[in-house]
Image 1 (spheres, rainbow, N blue to C red):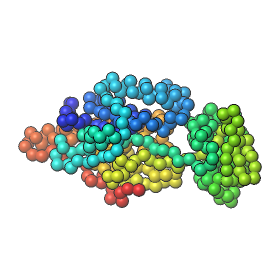
Image 2: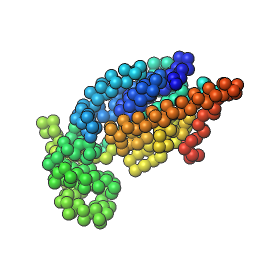
Image 3: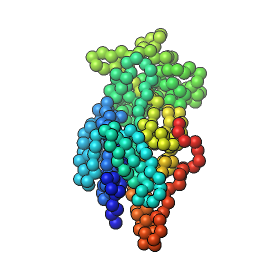
Image 4: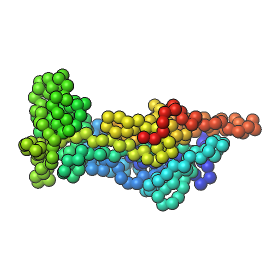
Length: 342
């Protein structure tokens, strides 16, 4: 059964054209839904050289991955539009045909959608160390499983500002025996005794900080500096603060939770947010997801969105046949009664 979208509107607007958003668009397009993907052309991983750990796409440059994905979704009639979504305007649940969300774009247009999938990702707030931002995605990295292979057998530093970041130094010993733990905003006595024993056993050197700068030679990281010493390195792992790009949906009352590395949008397991008709997938609601996991989340959320639309269509058809209004949609806060916003 194929549903007809509202006049001058679409079944689904996907905000964000990364792996999660395009994966959702692919599934919805194949489900014969009318889909608009809105993306501002500023992907989080633009500085990365390659995608890692994605079966059949390992080593693919991020822009090439998106080019392939765009070609695939356009086969199914999905529209890709370079624009920025500036506001979501929920519509009242008067009838199923009228309910949904309007999406206001930066070119002044407003798109009527029955459902919205937010796949806007997140942004990385890096430690405030001079020079780190310039090397981000090159030899200043954040994930052992993303970049460990590329840094194998090299001298790698791990910047730790919290006791729970020490584990990253232990993880890196899978790829290299030359790991330095750089304390940045924490003291040695904050390291748990068990972790101190593990660091010692694995030969991880611990350097007191804070780190005050980096040295670059021939366009490659050569060392970091503390107030007391220079530490030669070939790569540096840091833990950014992960900030969900969720302003669109928090502005209309979506719930978020604060975690150790930032705040995240709250959804149910299928991606439904606390705002009716708005769903989310990828890093905006799961900051630790890698590219392949974000794509999988987009697929899962698209299935849930399509099933939700099918149920609405069927209930509306039954109600019209009986001469009564269609079904009410999701409750105002399907995830509970917690406080909205940050």
